[in-house]
Length: 381
Image (tube, rainbow, N blue to C red):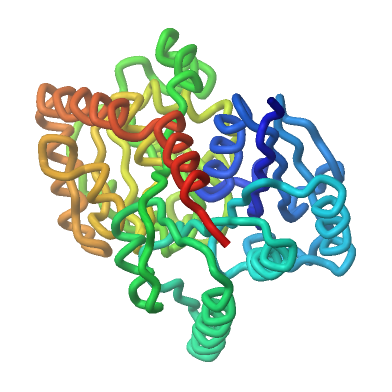
Protein backbone atom coordinates (compact mmCIF):
# COMPACT_ATOMS: atom_id res chain seq x y z
CA UNK A 1 0.00 0.00 0.00
CA UNK A 2 1.46 3.36 -1.03
CA UNK A 3 2.01 6.07 1.52
CA UNK A 4 -0.50 8.95 1.54
CA UNK A 5 0.71 12.22 0.05
CA UNK A 6 0.55 15.32 2.27
CA UNK A 7 1.28 18.88 1.09
CA UNK A 8 2.13 21.66 3.54
CA UNK A 9 1.82 25.30 2.48
CA UNK A 10 3.80 27.57 4.77
CA UNK A 11 4.80 31.06 3.63
CA UNK A 12 7.66 31.06 6.14
CA UNK A 13 9.99 28.11 6.62
CA UNK A 14 13.39 27.35 8.07
CA UNK A 15 16.10 28.63 7.85
CA UNK A 16 13.95 31.75 8.34
CA UNK A 17 13.55 31.74 12.11
CA UNK A 18 10.21 31.77 13.88
CA UNK A 19 7.45 29.66 15.40
CA UNK A 20 5.52 28.98 12.18
CA UNK A 21 8.75 28.03 10.42
CA UNK A 22 9.78 25.55 13.10
CA UNK A 23 6.23 24.13 13.34
CA UNK A 24 6.11 23.47 9.58
CA UNK A 25 9.53 21.84 9.46
CA UNK A 26 8.91 19.70 12.55
CA UNK A 27 5.40 18.49 11.66
CA UNK A 28 6.63 17.68 8.14
CA UNK A 29 9.47 15.56 9.53
CA UNK A 30 7.15 13.71 11.92
CA UNK A 31 4.47 13.07 9.28
CA UNK A 32 7.09 11.83 6.81
CA UNK A 33 7.54 8.70 8.95
CA UNK A 34 4.43 7.23 7.33
CA UNK A 35 3.53 9.69 4.54
CA UNK A 36 5.06 11.36 1.49
CA UNK A 37 5.37 15.00 2.53
CA UNK A 38 5.96 18.00 0.27
CA UNK A 39 6.36 21.55 1.60
CA UNK A 40 5.68 24.66 -0.48
CA UNK A 41 7.19 27.81 1.05
CA UNK A 42 8.56 31.22 0.08
CA UNK A 43 12.27 31.52 -0.63
CA UNK A 44 13.13 34.34 1.79
CA UNK A 45 16.65 33.03 2.58
CA UNK A 46 18.12 32.45 -0.90
CA UNK A 47 17.81 28.68 -0.75
CA UNK A 48 17.98 26.38 -3.79
CA UNK A 49 14.61 26.06 -5.47
CA UNK A 50 14.24 22.44 -4.29
CA UNK A 51 15.73 20.51 -1.39
CA UNK A 52 15.27 17.17 0.31
CA UNK A 53 15.25 17.29 4.10
CA UNK A 54 15.38 13.63 5.04
CA UNK A 55 12.14 12.20 3.64
CA UNK A 56 10.57 15.66 3.09
CA UNK A 57 10.56 17.45 -0.27
CA UNK A 58 10.75 21.25 0.01
CA UNK A 59 10.00 23.72 -2.78
CA UNK A 60 11.43 27.18 -2.01
CA UNK A 61 9.35 29.39 -4.28
CA UNK A 62 10.22 32.77 -5.84
CA UNK A 63 8.80 35.69 -3.86
CA UNK A 64 8.98 39.37 -3.02
CA UNK A 65 10.30 39.30 0.59
CA UNK A 66 8.37 42.27 1.98
CA UNK A 67 9.03 43.51 5.55
CA UNK A 68 12.52 41.97 5.51
CA UNK A 69 11.10 38.59 4.67
CA UNK A 70 8.40 38.50 7.33
CA UNK A 71 5.62 38.96 4.75
CA UNK A 72 6.69 37.28 1.51
CA UNK A 73 4.47 37.67 -1.55
CA UNK A 74 4.63 34.87 -4.16
CA UNK A 75 5.75 35.75 -7.67
CA UNK A 76 3.60 34.49 -10.57
CA UNK A 77 6.22 31.82 -11.29
CA UNK A 78 5.72 30.43 -7.77
CA UNK A 79 2.04 29.82 -8.45
CA UNK A 80 2.88 28.07 -11.72
CA UNK A 81 5.30 25.76 -9.91
CA UNK A 82 2.65 24.84 -7.33
CA UNK A 83 0.03 24.21 -10.02
CA UNK A 84 2.43 22.01 -11.96
CA UNK A 85 3.35 19.93 -8.89
CA UNK A 86 -0.29 19.55 -7.82
CA UNK A 87 -1.18 18.27 -11.28
CA UNK A 88 1.84 15.95 -11.41
CA UNK A 89 1.46 14.47 -7.91
CA UNK A 90 -1.87 15.50 -6.38
CA UNK A 91 -1.76 15.23 -2.58
CA UNK A 92 -4.35 13.24 -0.67
CA UNK A 93 -4.47 15.93 2.00
CA UNK A 94 -2.98 19.35 2.68
CA UNK A 95 -2.16 21.68 5.56
CA UNK A 96 -2.27 25.45 5.05
CA UNK A 97 -0.44 27.48 7.69
CA UNK A 98 -1.95 30.82 8.81
CA UNK A 99 -4.78 32.83 7.23
CA UNK A 100 -3.17 36.06 6.20
CA UNK A 101 -0.40 35.12 3.79
CA UNK A 102 -1.13 35.36 0.08
CA UNK A 103 0.40 31.91 -0.37
CA UNK A 104 -2.28 30.57 2.00
CA UNK A 105 -5.06 32.27 0.04
CA UNK A 106 -3.78 30.88 -3.27
CA UNK A 107 -3.34 27.44 -1.71
CA UNK A 108 -6.95 27.36 -0.45
CA UNK A 109 -8.29 28.25 -3.91
CA UNK A 110 -6.03 25.77 -5.71
CA UNK A 111 -6.79 22.88 -3.35
CA UNK A 112 -10.51 23.51 -3.67
CA UNK A 113 -10.19 23.64 -7.46
CA UNK A 114 -8.51 20.22 -7.47
CA UNK A 115 -10.90 18.82 -4.85
CA UNK A 116 -8.11 18.09 -2.35
CA UNK A 117 -9.23 18.07 1.31
CA UNK A 118 -7.24 20.37 3.57
CA UNK A 119 -7.14 22.07 6.95
CA UNK A 120 -5.92 25.51 7.92
CA UNK A 121 -3.96 26.08 11.14
CA UNK A 122 -4.16 29.37 13.07
CA UNK A 123 -0.89 30.28 14.79
CA UNK A 124 -1.91 33.52 16.49
CA UNK A 125 -4.29 34.38 19.31
CA UNK A 126 -4.86 38.09 18.76
CA UNK A 127 -4.50 41.06 16.45
CA UNK A 128 -1.25 41.79 14.67
CA UNK A 129 -0.65 45.51 15.11
CA UNK A 130 1.48 47.83 12.99
CA UNK A 131 3.34 50.88 14.38
CA UNK A 132 1.85 53.23 11.78
CA UNK A 133 -1.93 53.80 12.37
CA UNK A 134 -2.69 54.03 8.65
CA UNK A 135 -0.74 50.87 7.84
CA UNK A 136 -2.41 49.19 10.81
CA UNK A 137 -5.87 50.04 9.46
CA UNK A 138 -4.98 48.84 5.96
CA UNK A 139 -3.58 45.60 7.42
CA UNK A 140 -6.77 44.82 9.33
CA UNK A 141 -8.93 45.48 6.28
CA UNK A 142 -6.69 43.19 4.23
CA UNK A 143 -6.71 40.46 6.92
CA UNK A 144 -10.50 40.56 7.22
CA UNK A 145 -11.01 40.46 3.43
CA UNK A 146 -8.63 37.54 2.92
CA UNK A 147 -10.24 35.61 5.78
CA UNK A 148 -13.74 36.17 4.36
CA UNK A 149 -12.56 34.82 1.02
CA UNK A 150 -10.96 31.73 2.56
CA UNK A 151 -14.03 31.02 4.71
CA UNK A 152 -16.13 30.55 1.56
CA UNK A 153 -14.06 27.48 0.70
CA UNK A 154 -15.18 24.38 2.65
CA UNK A 155 -12.45 23.19 5.03
CA UNK A 156 -11.74 22.76 8.72
CA UNK A 157 -9.83 25.24 10.87
CA UNK A 158 -7.48 24.24 13.69
CA UNK A 159 -5.22 26.28 15.98
CA UNK A 160 -1.96 25.69 17.82
CA UNK A 161 -3.68 26.62 21.11
CA UNK A 162 -7.11 26.94 22.68
CA UNK A 163 -6.46 30.67 22.78
CA UNK A 164 -6.13 30.49 19.00
CA UNK A 165 -9.49 28.71 18.74
CA UNK A 166 -11.09 31.52 20.74
CA UNK A 167 -9.44 34.06 18.44
CA UNK A 168 -10.90 32.33 15.36
CA UNK A 169 -14.37 33.03 16.78
CA UNK A 170 -13.56 36.72 16.24
CA UNK A 171 -13.86 35.96 12.51
CA UNK A 172 -17.00 33.85 12.95
CA UNK A 173 -14.99 30.63 12.58
CA UNK A 174 -15.65 27.61 14.79
CA UNK A 175 -12.40 25.69 15.01
CA UNK A 176 -12.31 21.89 14.91
CA UNK A 177 -9.52 21.36 17.44
CA UNK A 178 -5.94 22.01 18.53
CA UNK A 179 -2.80 20.80 16.78
CA UNK A 180 -0.33 22.12 19.28
CA UNK A 181 3.02 23.71 18.75
CA UNK A 182 5.49 21.23 20.22
CA UNK A 183 9.10 20.12 20.66
CA UNK A 184 11.21 17.16 19.59
CA UNK A 185 13.05 15.81 22.66
CA UNK A 186 15.78 14.39 20.42
CA UNK A 187 16.84 17.92 19.42
CA UNK A 188 18.05 18.51 22.98
CA UNK A 189 19.61 15.18 23.97
CA UNK A 190 23.22 16.04 23.21
CA UNK A 191 23.07 19.54 24.69
CA UNK A 192 21.48 18.37 27.95
CA UNK A 193 24.06 15.57 28.24
CA UNK A 194 26.95 18.06 27.89
CA UNK A 195 26.04 21.32 29.66
CA UNK A 196 28.53 24.16 29.86
CA UNK A 197 29.70 24.12 26.26
CA UNK A 198 27.83 27.29 25.24
CA UNK A 199 29.11 29.23 28.25
CA UNK A 200 32.66 28.14 27.62
CA UNK A 201 32.49 29.14 23.95
CA UNK A 202 31.16 32.62 24.80
CA UNK A 203 33.26 33.47 27.83
CA UNK A 204 30.46 33.34 30.41
CA UNK A 205 31.70 32.28 33.87
CA UNK A 206 30.81 28.75 34.95
CA UNK A 207 29.06 29.93 38.13
CA UNK A 208 27.17 32.86 36.55
CA UNK A 209 23.38 32.79 36.70
CA UNK A 210 22.19 33.02 33.13
CA UNK A 211 18.93 34.68 32.05
CA UNK A 212 18.09 34.09 28.38
CA UNK A 213 15.78 35.49 25.72
CA UNK A 214 15.49 33.90 22.26
CA UNK A 215 13.45 35.46 19.48
CA UNK A 216 13.29 38.45 17.19
CA UNK A 217 14.78 41.66 18.55
CA UNK A 218 11.75 43.93 18.35
CA UNK A 219 9.85 46.06 20.82
CA UNK A 220 6.72 43.92 20.47
CA UNK A 221 8.64 40.92 21.84
CA UNK A 222 9.37 42.89 25.01
CA UNK A 223 13.17 42.86 24.73
CA UNK A 224 13.53 46.43 26.01
CA UNK A 225 11.23 45.56 28.96
CA UNK A 226 13.58 42.71 29.81
CA UNK A 227 16.66 44.91 29.55
CA UNK A 228 15.08 47.54 31.82
CA UNK A 229 14.07 44.84 34.29
CA UNK A 230 17.60 43.39 34.22
CA UNK A 231 18.93 46.76 35.35
CA UNK A 232 16.76 46.46 38.48
CA UNK A 233 17.97 43.00 39.52
CA UNK A 234 20.21 42.31 42.49
CA UNK A 235 22.59 39.39 42.64
CA UNK A 236 26.14 38.27 42.09
CA UNK A 237 27.36 37.42 38.62
CA UNK A 238 24.09 37.79 36.71
CA UNK A 239 24.35 37.51 32.94
CA UNK A 240 21.72 38.12 30.26
CA UNK A 241 21.79 36.60 26.77
CA UNK A 242 19.52 37.94 24.00
CA UNK A 243 19.74 35.61 21.00
CA UNK A 244 18.12 36.80 17.80
CA UNK A 245 18.28 39.32 14.99
CA UNK A 246 15.99 42.21 14.18
CA UNK A 247 15.83 45.88 15.14
CA UNK A 248 19.23 46.18 16.78
CA UNK A 249 18.84 49.96 17.22
CA UNK A 250 16.47 49.51 20.17
CA UNK A 251 19.15 47.70 22.19
CA UNK A 252 21.95 50.22 21.57
CA UNK A 253 21.75 51.74 25.10
CA UNK A 254 22.73 48.36 26.60
CA UNK A 255 25.52 47.46 24.20
CA UNK A 256 29.02 47.12 25.62
CA UNK A 257 27.91 45.81 29.02
CA UNK A 258 30.10 42.89 30.11
CA UNK A 259 27.18 40.94 31.54
CA UNK A 260 24.76 41.47 28.62
CA UNK A 261 25.38 39.41 25.50
CA UNK A 262 23.68 40.17 22.17
CA UNK A 263 24.43 37.26 19.87
CA UNK A 264 22.50 38.35 16.81
CA UNK A 265 20.75 35.64 14.87
CA UNK A 266 21.99 32.15 15.72
CA UNK A 267 21.36 28.80 14.08
CA UNK A 268 18.78 26.53 15.71
CA UNK A 269 21.52 23.96 16.40
CA UNK A 270 22.99 26.43 18.94
CA UNK A 271 19.74 27.03 20.83
CA UNK A 272 19.65 23.70 22.74
CA UNK A 273 23.19 24.31 23.99
CA UNK A 274 22.32 27.85 25.08
CA UNK A 275 19.18 26.70 26.89
CA UNK A 276 21.02 23.79 28.53
CA UNK A 277 23.28 26.41 30.15
CA UNK A 278 20.41 28.72 31.15
CA UNK A 279 18.79 28.92 34.60
CA UNK A 280 16.00 31.43 33.83
CA UNK A 281 14.28 31.95 30.50
CA UNK A 282 12.24 35.08 29.83
CA UNK A 283 9.71 35.88 27.11
CA UNK A 284 8.20 39.29 27.99
CA UNK A 285 6.28 39.50 24.70
CA UNK A 286 3.69 42.21 24.13
CA UNK A 287 2.19 40.04 21.41
CA UNK A 288 -0.71 37.75 22.20
CA UNK A 289 1.31 34.61 21.50
CA UNK A 290 -0.29 31.55 19.90
CA UNK A 291 1.85 29.00 21.73
CA UNK A 292 5.46 30.20 21.79
CA UNK A 293 8.07 27.70 20.64
CA UNK A 294 10.74 29.42 22.70
CA UNK A 295 8.90 28.75 25.97
CA UNK A 296 8.39 25.09 25.04
CA UNK A 297 12.09 24.69 24.20
CA UNK A 298 13.28 26.43 27.35
CA UNK A 299 10.84 24.53 29.53
CA UNK A 300 11.93 21.18 28.13
CA UNK A 301 15.54 22.14 28.98
CA UNK A 302 14.47 22.62 32.62
CA UNK A 303 14.71 26.42 32.68
CA UNK A 304 12.54 28.36 35.11
CA UNK A 305 10.35 30.54 32.89
CA UNK A 306 9.03 34.06 33.40
CA UNK A 307 6.75 35.11 30.56
CA UNK A 308 3.81 37.35 29.77
CA UNK A 309 0.58 35.46 30.33
CA UNK A 310 -1.28 36.18 27.12
CA UNK A 311 -2.64 33.76 24.57
CA UNK A 312 -1.37 30.19 24.49
CA UNK A 313 1.47 30.79 26.95
CA UNK A 314 -1.03 30.15 29.74
CA UNK A 315 -1.55 26.66 28.34
CA UNK A 316 2.15 25.90 28.81
CA UNK A 317 2.33 27.51 32.27
CA UNK A 318 -1.14 26.84 33.73
CA UNK A 319 -0.17 27.95 37.28
CA UNK A 320 2.75 29.04 39.49
CA UNK A 321 3.93 25.46 39.86
CA UNK A 322 5.32 25.65 36.33
CA UNK A 323 6.64 29.22 36.11
CA UNK A 324 5.79 32.89 36.50
CA UNK A 325 3.29 34.76 34.33
CA UNK A 326 3.48 38.55 34.33
CA UNK A 327 1.46 41.34 32.64
CA UNK A 328 2.80 42.57 29.31
CA UNK A 329 4.73 45.82 29.50
CA UNK A 330 5.00 45.77 33.32
CA UNK A 331 8.74 46.14 33.98
CA UNK A 332 8.52 46.12 37.82
CA UNK A 333 6.43 42.91 37.76
CA UNK A 334 8.91 41.32 35.37
CA UNK A 335 11.84 42.29 37.60
CA UNK A 336 10.00 40.88 40.63
CA UNK A 337 9.43 37.51 38.92
CA UNK A 338 13.06 37.28 37.82
CA UNK A 339 14.30 38.32 41.27
CA UNK A 340 12.20 35.57 42.87
CA UNK A 341 13.93 32.92 40.78
CA UNK A 342 17.34 34.49 41.47
CA UNK A 343 16.75 34.50 45.25
CA UNK A 344 15.11 31.05 45.49
CA UNK A 345 17.26 28.47 43.64
CA UNK A 346 15.25 25.53 45.00
CA UNK A 347 11.97 27.00 43.72
CA UNK A 348 13.68 27.81 40.44
CA UNK A 349 14.79 24.21 39.99
CA UNK A 350 11.42 22.85 41.10
CA UNK A 351 9.55 25.00 38.56
CA UNK A 352 11.95 24.01 35.78
CA UNK A 353 11.57 20.30 36.49
CA UNK A 354 7.77 20.53 36.71
CA UNK A 355 7.57 22.42 33.41
CA UNK A 356 9.85 19.93 31.66
CA UNK A 357 7.63 17.03 32.71
CA UNK A 358 4.47 18.87 31.65
CA UNK A 359 5.87 19.65 28.20
CA UNK A 360 7.14 16.10 27.66
CA UNK A 361 3.68 14.74 28.50
CA UNK A 362 1.63 17.18 26.42
CA UNK A 363 3.65 18.91 23.71
CA UNK A 364 5.69 16.63 21.44
CA UNK A 365 5.56 16.45 17.64
CA UNK A 366 4.54 12.81 17.86
CA UNK A 367 1.36 13.92 19.67
CA UNK A 368 0.78 16.79 17.22
CA UNK A 369 1.18 14.49 14.21
CA UNK A 370 -1.40 12.11 15.69
CA UNK A 371 -3.87 15.02 15.74
CA UNK A 372 -3.10 15.76 12.08
CA UNK A 373 -3.84 12.14 11.19
CA UNK A 374 -7.17 12.38 13.01
CA UNK A 375 -7.94 15.55 11.01
CA UNK A 376 -7.06 13.69 7.81
CA UNK A 377 -9.42 10.88 8.69
CA UNK A 378 -12.42 13.17 9.19
CA UNK A 379 -11.70 15.97 6.70
CA UNK A 380 -14.16 16.26 3.80
CA UNK A 381 -14.52 18.56 0.82
